[in-house]
Length: 52
Image (cartoon, rainbow, N blue to C red; front, side, top):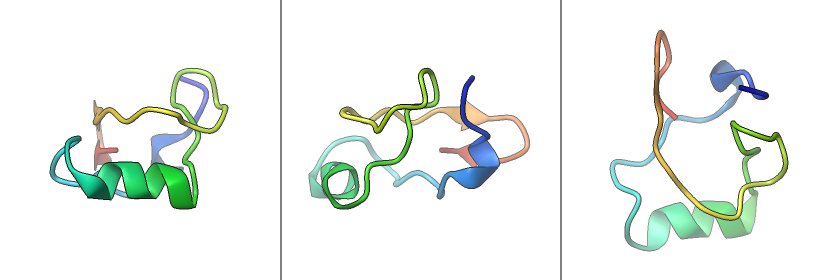
């Protein structure tokens, strides 16, 4: 993992609908795998920090 999950805001309740894609368009969060700005959305439940 290239991004500390504690630096990411909590994930929305779902990966479908407008909210996840609006978050990507407004201020893309870094991809937890590569660190580049995310172009897709996926919720990952991380130990100690919950869904990100």
